[in-house]
Image (cartoon, rainbow, N blue to C red; front, side, top):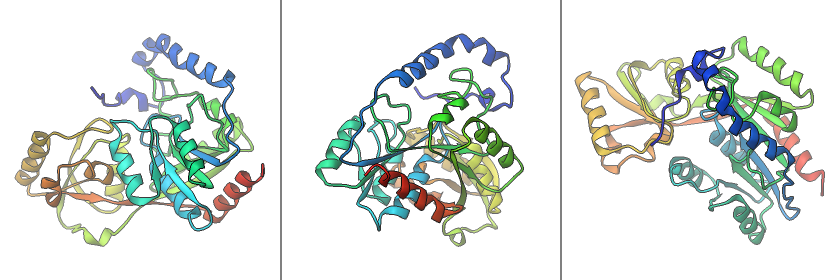
Length: 317
């Protein structure tokens, strides 16, 4: 059973529930300790980038992977990749549709098959907490709205690792919908931990906004890691959202759930809209009744990102 993210995770400070759960964070702490001391395998035959997060869900990993792929595909024989998870079919479908993509049950198998195909570079979607691989570059994604939530480790909060883990990573990508003063505070905290880390901003943009009738009312549903960010994007682009229905991340929709949503939307005299990640999982019989919002990231200082990646992946040649 998939669980919806607890609301207290995204409060600015830990509440009583978070404090009561502190003893259980020992499991994450132990895992992170062994992550530090375990020797990771280096693959000299191919270069690897891992795009991951320390905040659980909704940080824009997959769009970031696709953006980096688009920036590098003309110069390098590059592939995107993701460890196969039966309950994360949505991200795998999108990656396969928009890039050259590989997936296997473990990341070592992905690397070995990529070497056989004589590829130059693998861009992994997720895997920073994998104890087995020493990636050439490690990128961490954040959402500017949620940032680190209450700052606590799972299950007291949304963090897989403490924020101080940024000292071992190469770059941070901060996803935002519109700039705010919170960004400067985030930069400051990151640089205090790791003065050498690169910070790149990722502006979320809507593709083909003109195909939507913004005079209509909209019901929105989603099963993603950051539903709040998706609704904010709709409101920024002048969608009249009258109702929001939220499911757990990577939710697999049942026929009766979709029919109930469609009936409710009809009662309200509205149109129905969801994310691309949700749309790809829907039964084909319903897709012509549901709109989806396709997004893309605009990396601020894109040329500097390309230069940074190329300098790093070639420096050990």
